[in-house]
Every structure is written in structure tokens, then in C-alpha cells.
Image (cartoon, rainbow, N blue to C red; front, side, top):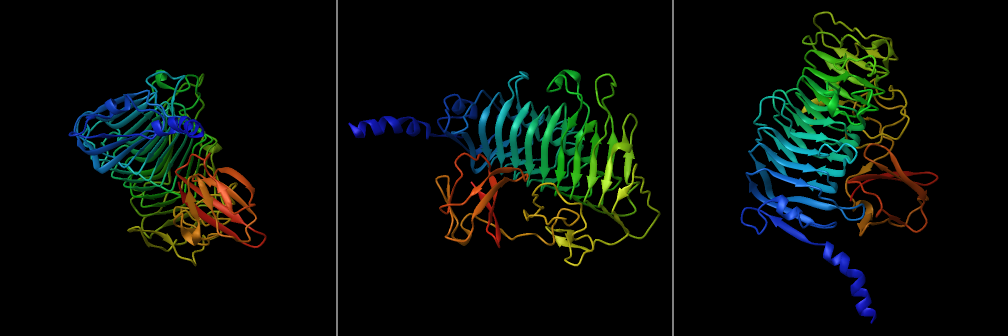
Length: 478
């Protein structure tokens, strides 16, 4: 009797732990055919090369049992109009796919036009988007009506001349972290149409196009989410990124309360940043203003026209600038035309950058900008996932991190098993858990050298262990 009862309890779990393979020679030839029978907890494995696009609607996991779409054997969607179209989906994790050579968009995820029922809780991890075949306003990854999401550890290469690496319309509460962008057309990341509360951090932007990060833009009135939004974007955070080349690193376009800080910007060809207003309606929209630019390390040469390009219908005087480093090699005079005072800035002192990741972007230990940034209001991690000192080093790299970081979950006998983190016996008395955007998720006393992580739905977390005398910071990949 007890055995029968146990089987009845386990049956839903066993039924949900299914796998379906999708390939040209498999029983399921398309993602849509497999997703039609998938339930929470299932995994769909994509194998080989698929040349036909696919549409998936209402694929829904739940908070306890996500649905996984995982690529194997260099799984590739190649050619066609759009590789994958996902609409009205929830709690889906997509990883290890290659998306290439599409005419319209690489991957398109949206709310099917039902603005009150957004697609939400989607994770896109370790995917490659490349070689867009379209030459107009075509995006490698297009997101519309998208909430509570993560795009991490992905590669975006060779975008369309008029498109974006990631284009967001009416997206909210997202994390775009640890991605690599190279050779984009219009921009690497664009956030418009009422987009709000997105953390863009620890990304590398190489030749990011006209505006590597476009904070705002211009959206047709029918496409705003929510419909009564008064801004193209707001509450955006762009920090600990590296920008190399491109026409302009960042553009503030119809955005308010957005902050660009602790970035390293090298070799912008025309402007460091822009202040613009493309959607003009004083009766509805707020003008671009009340934003900030601080703790950034900026190095440039004679190709730079001026520091900032300022457009009409904006409020440049409301911007705040402080604790930035500006360095130009010898040459023609430089037009440092900031619209308000840059408090505690450093001008004309070489950042003495040395090569790292193939570019001259990493500061020397003796650099004058170490400890010269404005204090940060929350625990923040640099490009290398080291915890910034407070006050921090200017730029994307902290030269005096407050603690070392362990690179994997088994370091120092730390073990993650079935959602439980097992720690070696030590003097640590408490712990704090952050997500990769530096947001505190949990804190508590440490009683038995175990931490339950089952309820934390993050790809990566940072655990800070503390005692009266020591602190240890560890990155965990779940």
C-alpha cells in the first residue's frame, strides 16, 4: 500500500521529466510539433541543421518546472525568413542554439499583440545569432511585450545594416548580461516603446554600429506597452560594459531616469554619447532628461567630433555627470561640450590601458582612476564578475576588488546538488545572495553549512559568505 501511494506521488514528476528530439530524421521534425505536447518540466532537444522557420504559441512551463529548449550537435536554424517565432510563452529556457542567415529576424519573441498578457519568464542562454541576411530594419533577436527575462552568455555577430542585435519594444524587468556583440549596423541593443527597468551589464560591444546601446528610440503609438507610457524607456541601467569602436557608444533617446556608469569606452568614432528626442508630443511624452553618466573611463582620438551630440526637444541641463575619466591622445583640439558640470572628473591623464580579451581595455594597478569613482548604492560586479570596491575604480574593471571570486561551483569543496548548496565547515555566520545585476535576492544567518537554492530561478547567482573577520564571494551556476 505504501509503495502504491509513493508511486502515485511520483507519477506527475516522472511524467513531466520527458525529452523530445527534433531533427530532420527524428519523429518530431519541428519545434512546434514537439512543443504541442510538451508540459512543464519537459525538455526539447534540437539536433543538426534546420532550414525551415518555426512558430510556437502558448508554450508554458511554471515557476517550479520550466520547459527547456536545448540545442545539441551544433543545432542550427539556417536561412529562411525568421528562425523561431515564440508567442505568449511562459517559463521557457532556450540554450545552445545557432541562429543564422535569416531575411526578416533571427528569433522573434512577442505577446501576440495581447498587451495585457505578456510573454514572461524566458531565459536565453549560450546562443549564437549571426550573419543576418536582411539588409534593412532586421534584428537578430526581436523582443516585444516581454517581461521578467534574461539574455546571457550569447554571441551576436554581423547584424543587418539597419537593424539591431537585440531590439526591445515594451519590455520590462530584464537582464542582458555577459554577451558579445560585434559588427552591428544600427545598434547592438535598442530599448523603446515603453521599455523599463532593464539591466545591461558585462557585455562587450565591438564596432557596435551607429549607437551601440540605444536607450529609447522611435515607436509607432500603437506599439507602446503599456499604451499610456510617457517615455520610450525609463529606469535603465547600463554598467560594467566595454565599448570598442563604433560611431557612438550610448544614445539617450526619449528616456528618463536612466543611468550609464562604470563602463570602459575606447575609440568611439563620432560621439561618446547622444541626447535625443525622436518621439515628440509635449502633451503626452516626457522629454529626454534626468539621466546620468558617471564613473566611466573614456579614451578616444582625433576621429571623435565632440563628446556629446545634443538634439532638440531634450533637457540636457538635467543630466548629471561626475567622476568620469576623459583621455585624448595628442592631436587636434577636442570639443568637450558636456551640458552641465562633470564633478570630480579626470581629464587629460592617460588611463594606461593594457591588452585584455584582445583589446587595450584593462587598467594598470597603479592607475590614478582606482578608487576615484563615485560610491555605488548597491553591491555591483565588474566586467570580470569581481565585486567593485566602494568607492570603485572608474570604468568596467575593478583593479582592487573587495574579494576574490571562485570560478566554479566545486571550488573549495563547495557543492551544488539537487538545489542544495553544501559548504565546508567554516567560521562563516551569514550569507547574502545576489543576481548578476547586483540585486539582493536573499540574506540569512548560516546555521548548518547548507543553503537551499531551489526557489531561486537565476542562471547565475553570487553568494557572499561573511564572518566577523572575513568575506568570501562565490559565483554559482545553477
